[in-house]
Every structure is written in structure tokens, then in C-alpha cells.
Image (cartoon, rainbow, N blue to C red; front, side, top):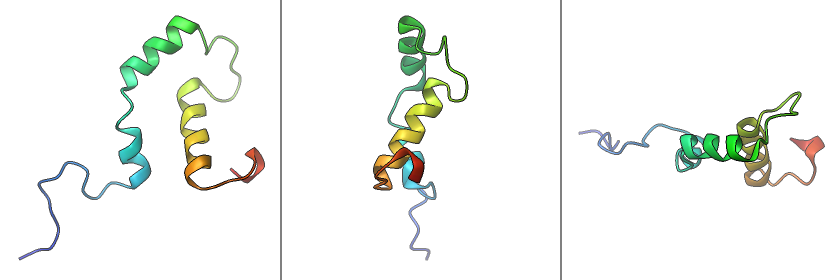
Length: 67
């Protein structure tokens, strides 16, 4: 008998991916569109910016340079 619980949806996924799964992407994109937050971006769109900032927070980075 295996110790792994294969019935759970999040088994085998990294924790960061599980956390991002709680953010409804379609609602996020709707807000981006409503507030036009992607109109001037050059490197990171809003979703990538969110992922980067959350990664920095969860990794306990002290500055953007650490990310």
C-alpha cells in the first residue's frame, strides 16, 4: 500500500503552484482589463508581476534585487 494520497487534487504540485491556484485567473484578467494595468508594461505583465512579488514574499527576499 502506498503512503501517497492520490485522491487529492494538489498532491505532487509545488506549494507555490498550489497557492497560485487559489487566485482565479479569469477574474484577475478581468481586473487587469478593467483598470488597464497592462497598457504600459515592458517586461512583466500583471500576472508575471504578481507571481514574482508573491515568490519574493514567500522566499523572504529583502529587495527586488534578491528575486
